[in-house]
Length: 257
Image 1: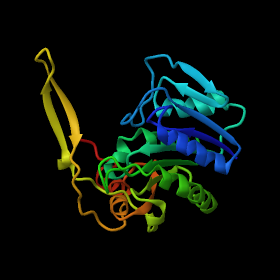
Image 2: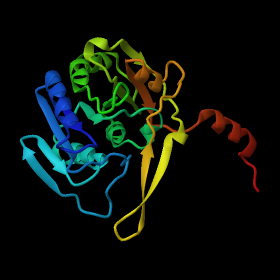
Image 3: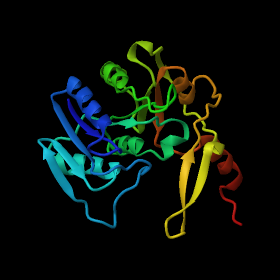
């Protein structure tokens, strides 16, 4: 099995080193193509107005001056053009990608691009800061990811679907289990805008998210994160809302305003 590893935190991030070790437990043919710099929050952006500069770090390891989407395209269409990967792993992100995060996340975008290219793809993230500020349980993701990936590959999932996996903020032996979840909804009031002045008295702004627990429904990715479960959320690339589609067909098809 050939595996392509990418991320959005950058080629030097701790998480991609952990994920590479995970991939190497699954295969002896692992390739790494990751952004040269941190692309957190880049979503599914694609570089179109600038050239893509590439550096080869070592055998089968490349950094790209671009986004996670760029990296997956370069990996599949340029570096591995003789034989496409059988699996794309994106992460492991330093911080959860749950609820509304999925629309902003560069980690998930790497898996989206892989799915668009017809390759089974997983986005993997590590929940942080739930138990204590600054807590980072890399050992949990590293310990649990290999068997989880084997199991989901054995189970399989449809084309046009990617799996969003989040490991909880606890030690491996404290994990209560796995939970197939739905996408939760974050409290948008937690986003604040911090207005400041620079030394030249010019105004600038920081976005900030308050660390306040919500009370999400059981079965959501948020609930799993709060309750020490590994969350596995299948995300579908077809964003069409079928109920509204049917409703609008009945009321608007053939009607001229």
